[in-house]
Image 1 (spheres, rainbow, N blue to C red):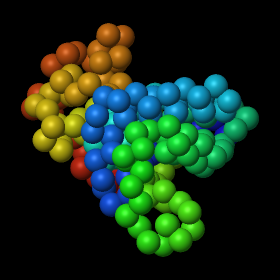
Image 2 (cartoon, rainbow, N blue to C red):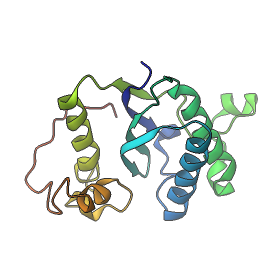
Image 3 (cartoon, rainbow, N blue to C red):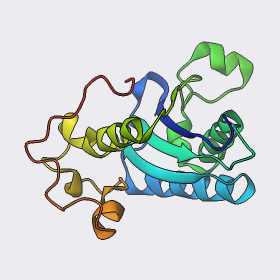
Length: 171
């Protein structure tokens, strides 16, 4: 669907916490920046947790190729991250000369309407609370939630006492 908005869940290989450090998240940010410069897309919402990412992208009106964008982001990150993260623990991938940082597959969902979009944004923002990393979304540093608070979309205390739809996403 050219120009569509998509929800994604991207998981690390064997759920290794390769995104647990600020440095690794910085490399991931740079991977996004590099790929967005060549193949534009808008990041509407994102959260980076130690072993997975949830995000919503809106693609340009004439383009629907999110698969190439994800391949380029994963590849760029793999080539530029701390070499200690590239320890290959997967014999099948070693045989093919591949690194074992990311699961091959990812979950994608075309957002159908504004209600679906909002449900997924809120799922993304609440995810660090769901996983027990923080008590409130604002406390998680690797999320677009702060940007949305600064823009006046959410209050800083959003997420306290909120029940988020567990039927969203795939982890």
